[in-house]
Amino acid sequence: MSRLATIPVSETGAKASPDQHCVLRVDDLSLGFRADTEVLSILDGVSFELNAGRTLCLVGESGCGKSVTSLSIMGLLADNAEILGGSIRLDGRELLGLERRSLERLRGDAMAMVFQEPMTSLNPAFTIGDQMIEAIRCHRDLNADKARQHAVEMLIRARIPAAEERLNEYPHQLSGGMRQRVMIAMALANDPQLLIADEPTTALDVTIQAQILELIRRLQCDTGTAVLMITHDLGVVAETGDDVAVMYAGRIIEKASVVELFDDPQHPYTIGLLSSIPRLDGNLERLPVIPGAVPTPNEMPSGCRFSTRCPFADERCLEQVPPLGEVAGSETHAVACWKAPLEHQLAYQEVGA
Ligand SMILES: Nc1ncnc2c1ncn2[C@@H]1O[C@H](COP(=O)(O)OP(=O)(O)OP(=O)(O)O)[C@@H](O)[C@H]1O
Ligand code: SF4
Ligand SMILES: [Mg+2]
Image (cartoon, rainbow, N blue to C red; front, side):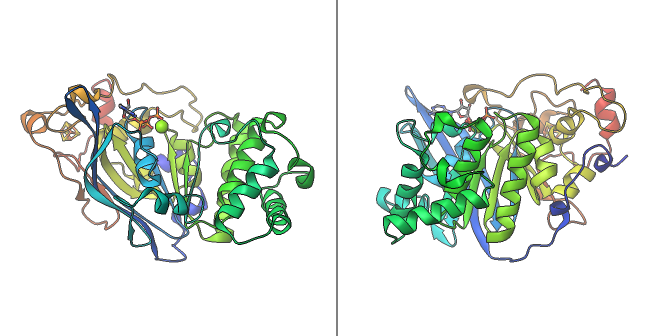
């Protein structure tokens, strides 16, 4: 049975790109963190691209490297991070190696980010208005009145009631959902080409989650912003994504359009993830999760990083890294597994995964 039957895929999952302009191209990005005398590999050969107006979901379990990928793009990595190779281009411009001031200019202007917990980005000591007006004036040549007017417009577009009054309030006076709306309004205030949303709804209750995702989608439609949506939630992928890249232990192991991924997953890990979501076809029990845990950075297997949990692993899997190769019959679907395509969706469950 198609997995589309168990989870609603939004219309955006199948829409054609309104604009083929490539906003973000991450190519063969490898990164490690220094620990004592060694550098532990975290990202290994991560590649993806994102066009204007599209939403790419980066999905994977906790610790797989989603946030490290987004922080690499924003130039916000911790001091112990070491880029080991690759390239990150925003609208054709290389970001790796860019000096700090140039990156600061791009942040909040050409690219912006919203985080899971808005309080990490909002300063509790200043009003919403102070913070929005400063963010706008850092990047736009507007006087204080015009910047204030623009802030109010952005709050209205983010469907925040009594927008004028909100400007005088402090972050703690707003609900979690309202704070996230403010963050989105602030992130989009300078009309960025790229918005990175790192688990933007994880801290919110389900109704508010849906409203926030809808808000991002609506504002994206207005502006043509490319959205990199980071999530561990396949429901969010189905709801918001055009394309999806599945990460496992610092590598991208499957890439596809959202429709292809839900309809014809190829990697045993992806199949396991999809089997772990609650079914909406009348059978509400949660299917078993993938047994085992993601290997820690200091115990990465040398071949396929999923080999410690994969019921199909053999000698070659343990020794050789499977490349990300095109799935026959699709230019947009790629998988990194020595044994794909596998006729094993049912077999996978039969072996107890
Ligand atoms: N500053 C750091 N020093 C050492 N290791 C780090 C550092 N920051 C992140 N890591 C490690 O990098 C790996 C990837 O972390 P990352 O935060 O990107 O995961 P994630 O996919 O975003 O997980 P989550 O879903 O929990 O947010 C983890 O093993 C994490 O412990
Ligand atoms: S390469 Fe081997 S271990 Fe890795 S997912 Fe495929 S079958 Fe499993
Ligand atoms: Mg994270």
